[in-house]
Image (cartoon, rainbow, N blue to C red; front, side, top):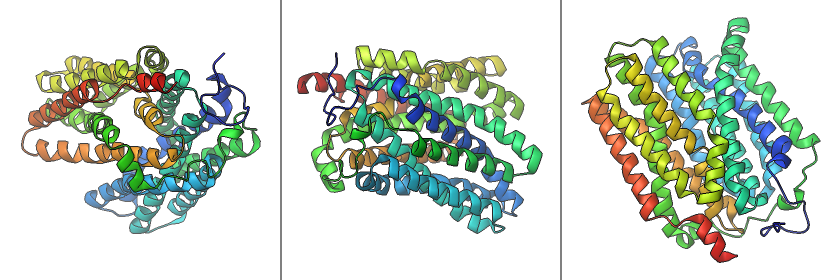
Length: 404
């Protein structure tokens, strides 16, 4: 029988099933709500009178809030514990959604989107820290790939639910959906006993300062961090490069939606096999193919000239991304220290979010000169990141075996 793997006291040995209600159900509710809101942010800003440029800023404000709060969320989780931090996150999300519903100023709406991003940062980091704490290394890949898969399912379902709500009650409907589901997720946290509660006590992580994280884990943050930046650039840039190329070759919005839908459907089916491979053969066994297939797919985009060739490339990119379900979270959990875990994961998430925010900016800047050039540049970044992970990053499972 596996031991507690460093977890305190005598809490039950966790399994994937034991996380179903306390982790995966709130994650699904959160992801559906987020998926309902994301497509409506720019349209809401336009409805409030914003120009196209200002509407883009409102969308960016949410991402900037997440980016700005990555490290503070680590400090918050370390001091309050995962469950209390998630309740604080729910309060931030609730306030921002209510403000978005009742407000009439586009600039105030942008502020509420920033607050929403802050709440998301705390919520996501608290979930990641909790799973990293309670799951033994040999199950961590499957646990976190499942969490990534649940998030993908939620963000796939959410836009349809949000669209139905908008048809019924207007733009407020999407925000009401997120509000109701956020409160429901918080209710699960409060009402359902945590079977691994000994792992989630406040103060367990509050021993390592942020500068200490950088000094003590510089090698991992430089090698593994470079890899996750490249992966984040791939994931974010595909949402820029592929639609723009589709427009370039004469495809309409409906065709682009179908391509993305097919890609997302393939992506969602791979989360558990990806986690199993990760736990059996190592994190590199999924991270490197994930990045390589996505990079190759993006490199192939300029060679397509119609719907079906571009759809096949979209499927290749979706397959690659599905192999990497939860890999950023898994690597962060593997490399994080037992003390100072939340702070480390805050830095880890910040590194990934820099790639998420910077990828579209890089792709858009190059696309202004050459759309094909943007595809090539992003693909090369992805291949370079895969090489860094393969040759430079230590294999976390080997490190865990050495520690044991």
